[in-house]
Length: 251
Image (tube, rainbow, N blue to C red):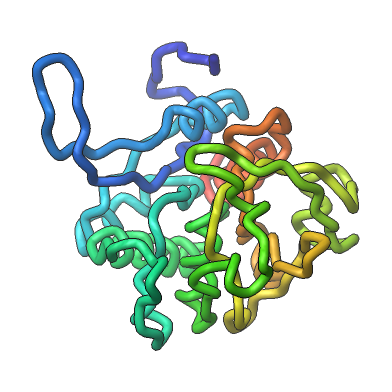
């Protein structure tokens, strides 16, 4: 559990927005549409020293929160709408979530323009790639001829990734050039978007991470660090958020 002390006017922890779902959920006597995000994201940000804020998928509205944030996490979730990258949905592609696609695209573009540190996770990395003009493989078993990246419903795969040295990702991981990761996805990067550079790969050649080297911290990973045991990426995101805030806010 993270540091849950009350927020005060003098609290100096960076505020980290986490993009959220709108989905049917049940609790108590209620079964209604709700805005939610898996708690693992919230706890990971809190443990890293950030103040997590859940961002609803409201395009044209939620972007108004960007000036109040110090960093952005674009969370995992359902498939990105293929028509956003000029493709028709395949037979294994999930139904579109246009509201979430639009809201998160607005958050990504606005955060990058504002210079906020950005961490895209799974779908978040894919949407970052699409927002930069890239494309996706809609169903990896058709391309890779195995299902090791999502071995069973609700079960994370566990495999190593090779990390390019000298990159933002390698720096965030303490200089490691190989690391085991938990993964759960059936889609992946095909054509890489503009100004993005691949920085990690699996043994089968799939791109597992992207970053914009021109920005202080704009990193996307295909895996799910929030459910793993390595806090390095969240630590690096919060550190980048703190450094940006301290450089732009008068003492």
